[in-house]
Amino acid sequence: MKTFPMFLQVAGRTVLILGGGEQAAQKCRLLLKTEARITVQAAELDPELSELAARGRIRHDPSAPTAGACAEAAIVFIATGEEARDRELHALAKSVRALVNVVDQPALCDAYTPSIVDRDPLVVAIGSEGNAPILARQVKTRVEEMLEPRLGDLVALAGRLRGAVAEGVPPERRRDFWRWVFTGAPRQRHAAGAEREAARLVKEAIAAGGAPGTQGAGLLSLVPTTADRNHLTLQAVQRLQEADLILYSAEIGTAPLELARRDAARMALDGPLAPADPAAQVAGALAEGARVAVLVTPRSDIARLLAAAGEAQIEHLAGVAA
Image (cartoon, one colour):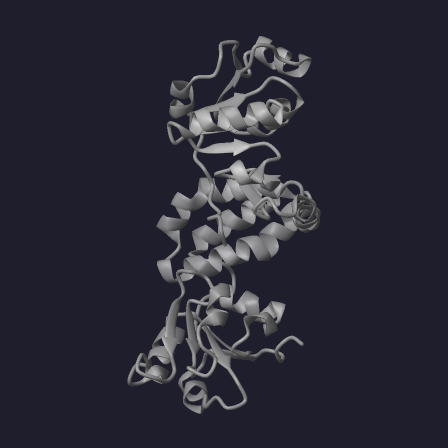
């Protein structure tokens, strides 16, 4: 990646838009969904921006852009609609090392505006580093279809209940609890329009100390793979993203681990980094209710791991994707 994807905190901060026409209005429409203080700096505003300024939604500054104003902004959007003028303003903003986005000029951008799927507070941003905005919008359409329109309300409910979960659900059961909330009955009922029932199910599970049916031994998933992470099936990727502990061999390497949760523990089965007794550590993790994924090939020796599973559930995933 040439750019690092992240979300910029703009609540209570000034975002500066240089320009008063349609391009500036497009950026305003996006920023109005945030809690940023929006300043539009231009001699004249188009009717849409004028209306927003009259209603107090944005601040209009008719004076000429200055380096000082750029320096104070969280980000500067340059959108005059005139390429030469945009380049002049880019030089002005960069003279004070401001974070800049120049509309339709990727080479002048420090940050790109992604395609956004908005299920506030859940937000999905899709970018192509300015190379293929049409493709990014196509991906956005697919994601829009995946996420039900009112999913953000369930996410907001989860946020309000995080304190109660911290008090009522033991640490070793919380990941399974949240997995159940967003893949089990609460989400299904919420998506069907039964928001109150979904909230009731979540609160009852908190009072019970965890999600229904999640107490006890963990899950050992045997994930067929190769050194090429592109061969993993969708189910395999899901298991890697759910796993608390992932085991891999030197034959496979670490490339498939790039698809796993960043905070998952990783353990080599062989080589200088391997522990003396991987099976014992797997047994301990499963006994605590952890989800363990083992990346296996036809040559993998997993007999000791299977024996260490004890009463834990074991699943054999289908072969690698073609």
